[in-house]
Amino acid sequence: MMKIRTSETKMAYIVSEGDHALLGFLKEDDKAYNPLSEVFLRKKLINPHARIARSIAKERSGKAYLKRKENRYLTEKSTEVIETLFPTAKTVVAHFRKIKELELAAGSFADLNSATGGDDA
Image (cartoon, rainbow, N blue to C red; front, side):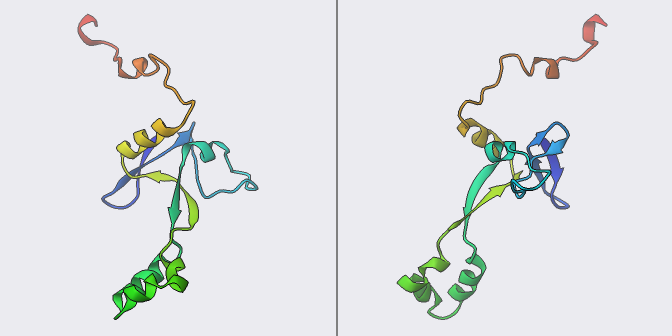
């Protein structure tokens, strides 16, 4: 897990394997594709017509237009994308808890908190 700067004031977490980040936008035929990205990155449904729907909703009787049966596709989330960035540590933990067969080994982080020296040095 690495923390990176996404803008001047915002940070985000990105999942990494070794020194390489797992990227969700790469497909299987790319040479940099890593199959672990399918497992560890989160999938999200998006609405590809959201920008158009928001502009229509601002117009007069736009919301009624969007509620019509023939125009309902403008408000439905239909496309699945893989998110590369996690905005907070809480979203990372919540996502990794949902992955089945993923367990943390007991004592795997014990060496990270130990510091050399101290009173005995």
